[in-house]
Image (cartoon, rainbow, N blue to C red; front, side):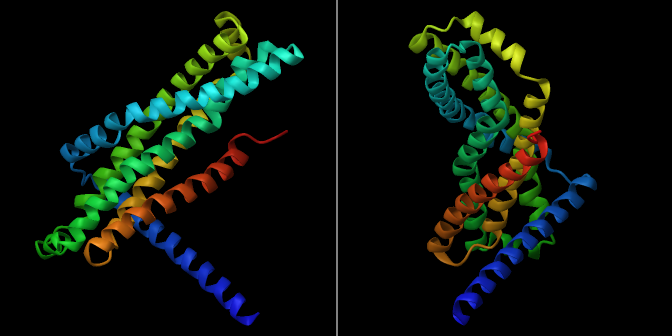
Length: 259
């Protein structure tokens, strides 16, 4: 029994240590940004790689999610005679929850893993040590552009997720339950508020910050050899996904309280 509680204690302290390290990296990144030490050229390149190149897979994923939601809601709505709520239900689900969260998970799997692998490879090949020898701060040189890129691009990707997820839901509702597009659209207008979209975009900003910080931290703390790079990449995706789900729950409690 004592060993069990010791194990729990070690896990808790490891978690707190990890979160503290992420927060310290966040503060250092903010300090460089506030001082204007931003490599805008590299930031734009990262925006293209992490944002534009991720658009197709994000749209495909969230469109499918919107279609699945509409498939379930449409048949239940037809059964109970409340087809006027299907459009609003799909739009609210995509704006509040699925759009931001699925976008973040997809980007964590594609972009976050790439960041961790790239920085991890630089760590293993001692390129980061070379930067330090040249008096170049690795956080300023490597972390700041990637964090800024994801923070700026994630809400844009989230907006596309909301739009295409809702469009997919409208198509599926019409094809599977004969719900007219006009009824679907009127439901969105009557049930969806601007705050649903704006809070969803806010979630996207937070998720972008979380994914980028986790990926950069794992890359900077990569172990030796190719196995170390692989472990950092895997840990980046796993940790970012867990943090996304937990923070999504907490932000939903705060932004969308149940009256």
